[in-house]
Image (cartoon, rainbow, N blue to C red; front, top):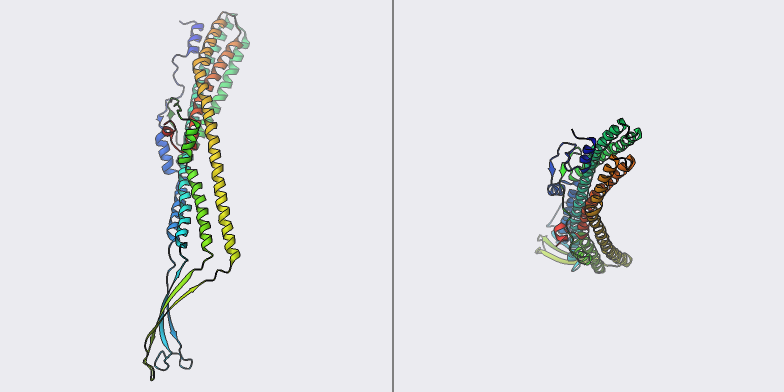
Length: 426
């Protein structure tokens, strides 16, 4: 039979520890992203809005329907139901009129509507980037929580063995009862953390299901471990790519161009619109008039005297252009900051992962192993043993949180640049 000391050392080294919970089915990130992009109602709403404005753009250059006219002209008041033969001026008249905007207005109106629709099209692409980022962030948060649960479960088993050893030493007069109480208290703290982490996982599952537009209680399987990808591109290169590919930049550029086109349209409003007309008169012969048919052509146009209204339109379009341009400049500045900030955080997390894996955790394991040996021969107290276990626990949590945060910062960087992970590392 193994001694209590051998059992404790075996547990601390945890060369192979079976998971406490039943094995979940391994999930894959790519299908979840595909499902989110296909099913998310907010994205579908954005697509419907774009289709609405795209349809408006098709209408913008269309002419107004022509107007058909029929009238009975110059009827005699004393014979109102007589339509001919009594007076040479009485006639039946048909006509058609067509309104024509001043030259160039229709093309500019279509351009304005098209640019507005284009801005909504790029809004869809921006929303897709945000959705993918949120799915990835939630995904890696779930991974970190799962790792936290594994560590808690492992430490619960370690603490159970600590209690066994403390009780064994106390039974032979080599320990104190206080050590047993301390181990029990630490175990209760671990159980409290386990409850909190399980609640966090359920909340993250609900958030992921919300993004995928599926029932909130749909279970999310286990998430496989991953390697941290290396970043080979500089902040300057990423910023250049963002200015070329970020949908938000393209959307604001479209709105700025729309403002310029609206200004040109406002300038056209100082010129009149025209209305062309054609009328054909059917006459009947009378005693002294052969009753030849007649026709008439005409053109009317408005007189653009309302200068204040037209000047206000110019001012409105100028302000619209200025607003969109400044929003574009602000967005470029924000992207530059976000890229540099994300790269700094990614670099920090990478260094921490390397430090924990290559130095801190191995040293903490050795320190705990030494504490176990020393406690066995009464060279350290039980509190030192618990401190060593707690330090290792915290370092392992920091390692997994650093790995998860690295991937979340990478997801944010992808969203800022407007490309996927492969292009970020290209």
